[in-house]
Length: 147
Image 1 (cartoon, one colour):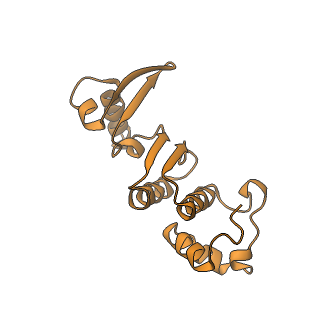
Image 2: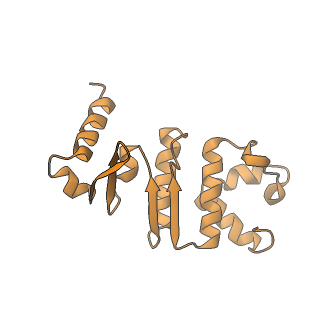
Image 3: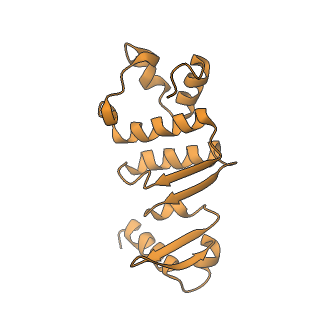
């Protein structure tokens, strides 16, 4: 539990980094505002950002993300990815993701097909050869272009 473990200043700083400072500041209870069970009084994107804020406060060295941006819009996904790149650069990050942009700047990508590990390398190396990953990136690019 985080209660009284961190100063208000540390919490506000974390909320600011997660783009939630204004949202929390506008609530009548501010830092004492209620977060309902499962965060149901917050949007899906806000819940993910709150989770990142908690991890920032804890200064974890390992960050495990399981489809962290699967249920958010592309703008919130981009915001979350930016926060992860900037605030967790010294962490080991293990991320399960289906969105191509989410994994493009990773050190290593593990491609799983039909429950089996098929490829494991940096995105750059996987793109340099015929690979399942390269095919996924190409398919993503075509869909994004509307082709």
